[in-house]
Length: 138
Image 1 (cartoon, one colour):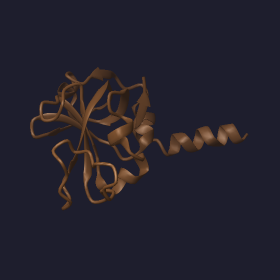
Image 2 (tube, one colour):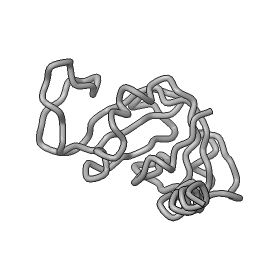
Image 3 (spheres, one colour):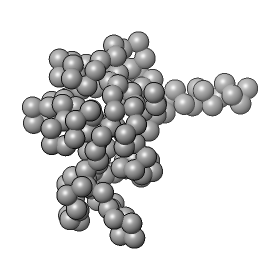
């Protein structure tokens, strides 16, 4: 009974990947051909960069150990090719970053699949993540 409740709760709280079930799986390079569609994109995350906000960050985008945590910046995760040459990226808005822990460390060089809707941002394919359940590890 508890297991069924946990599974049901997980499905209700997982709008990204749960709603993308049955959606096509595409590569990061093919994502631009699926604008506005709900898909699953698989690939390797190679860089993490903080964007927006008012706290200046180093060029690597990663806060040095001992520095105060960044709370007012969104996080941009680049697939397969390092920023700024990525063909696909994930954006974790500043308001949602706390839900993800420290993806700027934990997701680097990991192969993942993410579910959601592809959008065009400055000529490149991008997906906005609002919950960690949109991510599955390969």
